[in-house]
Length: 328
Image (cartoon, rainbow, N blue to C red; front, side, top):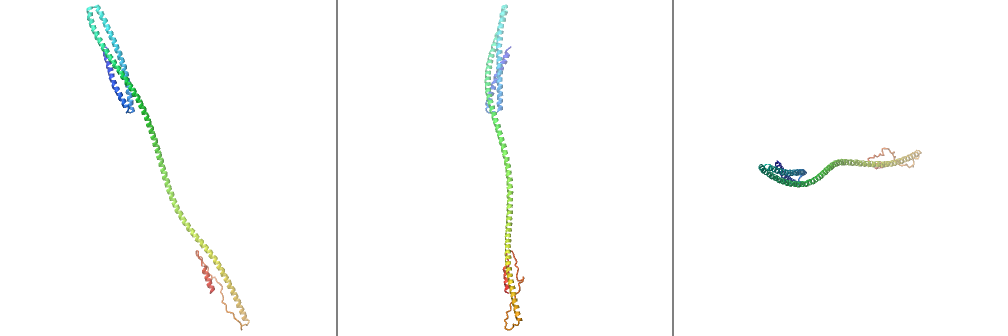
C-alpha cells in the first residue's frame, strides 16, 4: 500500500533534484549577467535566487518527509513479517498439514513483502541520498544566491551612488545652463544699453557738431561786428579829429577876419583923414596916399564846411581854398 506513495515521493525528489540544476545554472548565468546588466536584471536575479532558496528548503523538507515515510514503511514491513511468522506458528500447531501449506504460502508472501520492503528501503535510501545531494546543491545554490544577492546589493549601491552622482551632475548642468542663460540675458541687456548709449553719443556728437557750426557762425558774426565796431570807432576818432581841426581852422578864420576888420578900420580912418585934409584946402603941394584896396568881409560862402565821410575829412581842401581866396 505504501509503494505507490514511495514511488511518488521518489519521483518528486528526482524531479526537484533535476529542477535544481537548471536553477543553479540560471543562478550562475544571472551572476555573469550581473557584471554587465542593469539594476532591473539584478533584481530579477535576486528574486530567482530567493525562489531557489525556497525551493531547496521545500526539497529538504520533502526529503525529510520521504525518509520518515521510508522508515515507517520499513517498520510496518517488519511488523507484517513478524505477524506472518506468528500466524504460521499458530497454524502449524493446530493443523500440521494445512498449516504447512498456509505457512509455505505465508512465508512466500512474507519473503515477497520483505523483498519489496528491502527494495523500498533501498529506493528510500537512494531517494534520501538524492535528497541530501539536492539539499547540498540547494545549500550551494543558496550560498551562491547569497553571494549574488550581496553582489547585487553592492551593484545596487553602486548604481544608487552613480544615479545620485548623475542627478547631482544633471542638477549642476541645469544650474550652469540657468546661469549661462542669465548671463546671456544680462549680456543682451548690456548690449541694448550699449546700443542706446551709442545712439545717445551719436546724437550728442551731432548736436555738438551743430553747436560747433553755430558757434563758428556766431564767431564769424562777432568778428564782423567787432570789425564794424572798430571801423565805427575809427570813424568816430576821425570825426573827432576832424572836428578839432575844424575848430582850429574856424579860430584861424576868425583871427583873419578880425585882422581884416582892423585893417579896414585903419583904412577908413586914413581915408577920413585924407578927406579932412582935402577939405582944409591943402590941395597944393600935398602928397596923396595911394588908394588902398578894400578888403571885403568874409562871408559864409568863402568858408566851406567840411563833410566827414567814414574816416576821411576835407580840412586840407578847406585850408587851401581859404588861402586862395585870401590871395585874391
